[in-house]
Image (cartoon, rainbow, N blue to C red):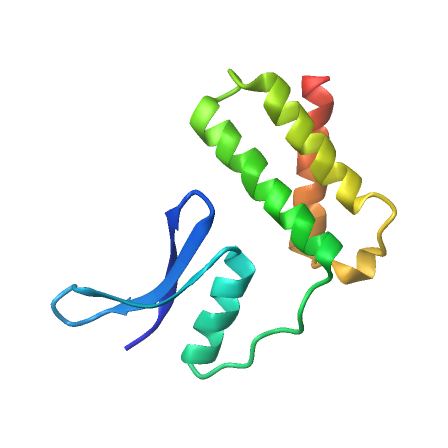
Amino acid sequence: MSYFYIKSEPNLWTVGFEDSKGQWHTDSDHDTKESAANRTILLNGGKPPAPVSKEIEHGRKMEDKAIESIVNNGLGGKLEVKDLLRNVLFNFEGKDARNYSPMQIACIKEVRAFYNKLV
C-alpha cells in the first residue's frame, strides 16, 4: 500500500490511500501541498525535507492561486491573474537562489515571462 495526496478542494490537500477495492481511506487533510507531500513521504517511510520559510510558503500559495485562476478563468480573469503573478514574483525577487531548486527557478522564469506578456 502506498499513500498519496490529492487536491480535494480549492485550498485543501488530502492524504490517504486506496485499498485493493479502490476505496479511498483518508489519513489527514492539509492546507498546503507541501504539508500534504511531507506527510505522504513520512507515511511511505521516507524522511520529509526541512521546513521552508514563511516567505517561500506564501509564494507557493500565491503560485497555486495564480495557476488555479488561469485554469478556471483562462485569461478572462486577466487583472486578477496579473495581480497574483505580480505577488508571486515579488515574493521571489531578491531571494537567494540557493534556496530554490532548478525546477523552481525555471518556473519563476516562466511566470516572469508570462507576467511580462500580460502587462
